[in-house]
Length: 150
View 1 (cartoon, rainbow, N blue to C red):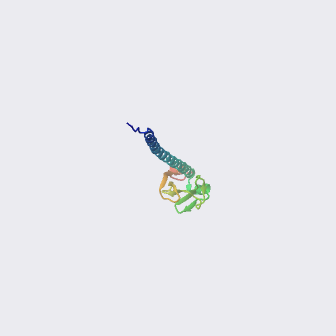
View 2 (view 1 turned 90 degrees about the horizontal axis):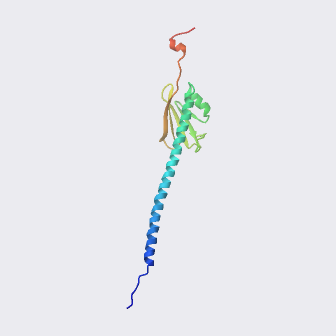
View 3 (view 1 turned 45 degrees about the vertical axis):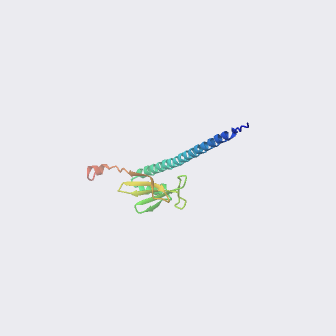
């Protein structure tokens, strides 16, 4: 009586193959999660810099009664088109010429002392961030009294 015994190595080989398959699936899922986290981190960094840049431009605009004039003096590469000012920024958010700009800040005059500042990539019209800013012009004593004061 000759009994044939199955080698146990085939069972061991199947276990290794299942473990490798399970490991490959987990690695794929983890890589996708890390890639998604990296993308969200980059987008958050760009959004934070856009908010900081728009806030800086808004404070410059509010610092004087003639906001356009002071913005053009601080950002010499800015383009002035009627009631709109365009300021271009490179990848590091440093003001630059239009040709090397990766991002664009657009300041549109809405009313006498208010403007809308929007920030987007230079090749897209989708806003990353926008803010409305108003410049406060205090009344003089003469204007309060409604007449000429001597």
